[in-house]
Image (cartoon, rainbow, N blue to C red):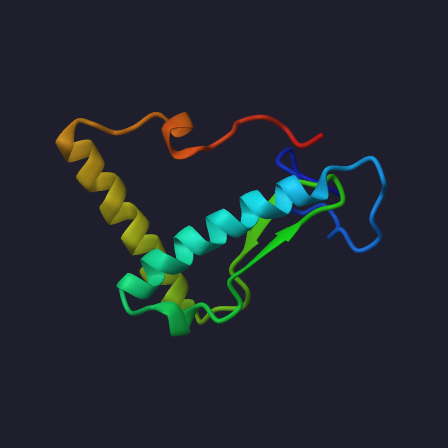
Length: 107
């Protein structure tokens, strides 16, 4: 079973020769490092010990948060909401593509 973004597709454990796994993993690593940097700046790195880069069977990069405490999930949701509120208040909310978001289904 997979969602349209491939997030719940199986992990890539048995590699196929025609899938660009490295590209997906590198993108995931960059995303994980960016998130880790922000969490570290906020003193929250210990709340996300399982943060890592991964990829699925299609070669799509995934950032895994790992198991986190419910309080850490609530705090992350509050930080996201605060950031969005600040962007909306500035009237300069960037388009999703400015943050590198892709709205394309997984292959």
